[in-house]
Image (tube, rainbow over all chains, first blue to last red; front, side, top):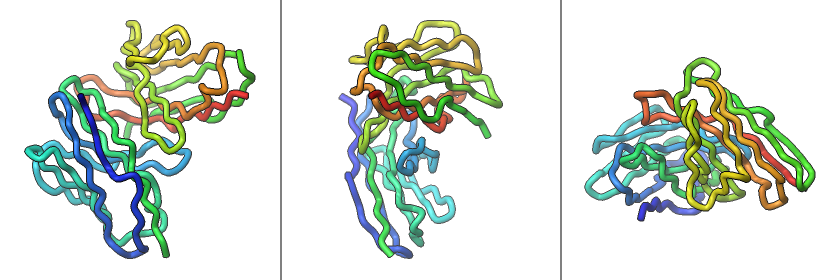
Length: 109
Length: 116
C-alpha cells in the first residue's frame, strides 16, 4: 500500500534549527511536496522536490533521497510564526497526492 | 499566481439539511478539482476528484450520493453535503489543478462546516 510517515509533533526553540523527516512508500513517484498549515487554514505550498538533493529557499530547505524514500524539511532561524503543522505529500504515478498526517511544530521562546 | 476561492468560509447548519460549498479558480481554468476533508489533528483526506464536464471519481469509503460534486465549468466546482449530520462537521478544502501541470495543486482557503 501507499504510506507516508512523519513525526506527530516536534518542539523547538525560537532562533534554532529544526529538521522534520518524512519517509514515503508510493506506487510510482512524481515528486514530494511540503506544505505548511496553520490551524484553521488551508495548506500553503513550501517546496517541491523530484530530484535527489537539497533545495534551499530562504530559511526553509527541503531534501530528497529517492533511493531511500526519504525527505526532510529544514527550518532555520525559527520564528514564533513558524508554529504550524507541516505536511509531507508524495505524488504517485497517477499524479495523486498521498498525504502524511502532518507534524505539529511547536516553537518556544 | 493561481488563486482559488471557496464560499462560504464558515457554515453552521441543522442536522438533516443540505449545504453547498463552492470552489472557484479565479484567474485560471482548472481542468481538475479536488475535494478534501480534514478532521481535527488529522491530515487531509481526498474525497473525490472532479474533471470538468464529467462525473467525479470518489475515493473508497466516500458516499457519492451524500457528497454531490458538480464541476460544471472550468472555473467552478461545487460540493453539496446532503442530509448533513454532526459527524459531517469538518474542514472541507478544495484544490484546483491545471492541465499539463499535474504536479501542482492550488488550494482554496477551506470551508468549516458545523452541523448541529
